[in-house]
Image (cartoon, rainbow, N blue to C red; front, top):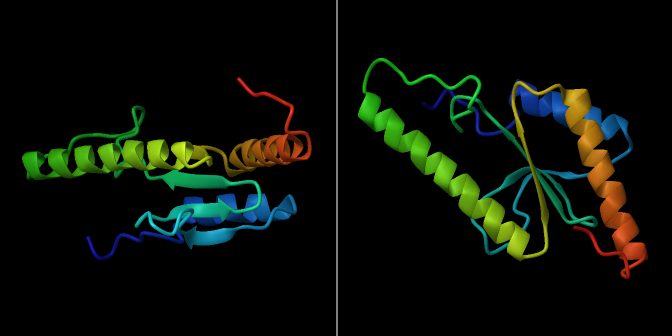
Length: 135
């Protein structure tokens, strides 16, 4: 498992490049909240947006995840823990006032970047006019 990257994967690099081309600046593989021992792939601090690009295998993508043929119980437990940790992280960050965006590695990087940009605009507009209530 040491050969599996935890950051700078091809899908993550493609998303970062697309988001950067839109003029958005972000931190890479950073903790959105200092007390949370987990990192987001992209952190846009001013707009309080945390972006995760989840691998289809490691995070149990409903479209692409397949159970391994060997050592099934070990891998099933590991993947289940990953999914549980993802949910905990998302819930924690949302309670702390962050917008959490999760994408699968197979999603089009340009489409992902568009959605990040839309979220940033919405966050900045909300900051400029706190009377706006989002649903």
